[in-house]
Length: 187
Ligand code: SF4
Ligand code: SF4
Image (cartoon, rainbow, N blue to C red; front, side, top):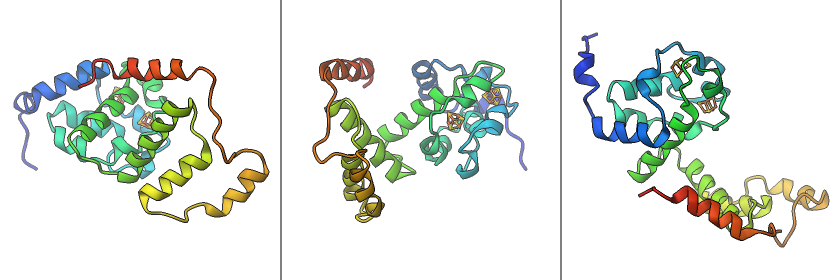
């Protein structure tokens, strides 16, 4: 395999990767590639690149490869990697920020996860929580999987876990303010 000049590689996509670090609060050069994050990640078995490899791609200026990866969409933001990292690299937040950048650029490796995220956040904004039936119905409609999990609907109603009219939290204004606050500073 041909060698790579790391000093040149690190300059690729410099501005965008710098912005990514600023937004996530992560200094990617802090990572010394020990792999502890990947070893503890509960979703690593399904990823096309390990969490350690994602940060390595960014260190090497290979932004597009990181953005095209399914890994950033499969990350469950469970924080295991951030908690275990001996260098205090908050990889969970870096994953989230990288996913946001991918979405902004229209690079969506896992469309159904993106659809699910959008519906979940829409429900939170509207109701202060995400009612299961509404979430499932909207997801099935938008993903085209019309009959997915329909057999569990009667049980959800009978057990009182689902309601025809979605409940709302009392202080929805507070929820809207949280959303506004989160969106502040985002282009
Ligand atoms: S655990 Fe931390 S230092 Fe080790 S590879 Fe993962 S991000 Fe890098
Ligand atoms: S936050 Fe994401 S990358 Fe980190 S351990 Fe959890 S699922 Fe894996």
